Length: 405
Image (cartoon, rainbow, N blue to C red; front, side, top):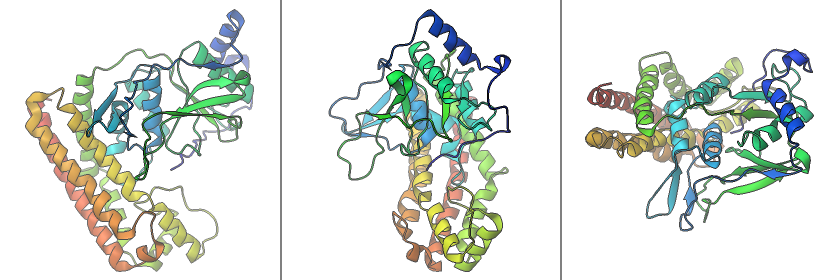
């Protein structure tokens, strides 16, 4: 589930004074006026999870966790919801990120683009958010010393966590502090929930010295200029669910369901040939296929690409369901329609989480996935999934009519 780093066109390897990012000018000025401490941990303003709560999530989408953790830790978030006999908590910020980016309504396993992520931060009131890269070929390149100063400035002066993604924290984290003058970064996150975990509801910290590498990137959210009230968030989120599902069912994205289903209905040799031709495996989340095109290697790629498909898609529709479930508190007059949507998307996420998943197991069993009869049943699940999304679109349209939107 690691996220590929976007690498824009090549630029000079160092800044001229004219090209220096605004955050570096601010950092230099702050350093002159009041030197940063040797080590610093940003004060924690996050929502406190009661000791009896055992589980956080499930929440595996990297970007949505980064957003949720940053807002919550900075005391700018929308809080948690505690339920299921007090055992579970859900971060409302995570749900909002899943809905507003369209990740929860994707027609197949699709990654968010950098443009989609930036647009979401802007919508949430952060118009000056910026990304910087350790890759000298990047448009926004930063050397280690510069990046270290930018991180210290964001933490010490702006009073805000930053994001420095790590592949070994595959569900996302934020940086809340540093030690040794910035040579050590302190990361904060919630451990991902797995079925056999006793407790993952208390956040964890970890320290890293190897944080600056060729693929390192830094995200600074910047000053928040506005904050949407929750009633407006639920109204706008409903519009977005309708817009995204309409694009899936009636627009250009409907092909993703078709390609996913058609791929599963192919014979194994046909699937291998298709991946060699297109360098992709429809339905699965993955980077493009590269390297030796032996049949065995391509088949391993196909299996790996489909390893988490059921989980990603089940979680996506779960958070559509959960969005409507949360919304009832703010729109009690729409309870009947919201109940319908709640129940419908519970059914939709189960198509992936219960039916599709049981065919090949978790982790995927390649010898089982190789059976055409198994893949045929999985293809039927994809068809049901598409029909369920069409039904979800119709129910959302009715809800918007009742809202007068």
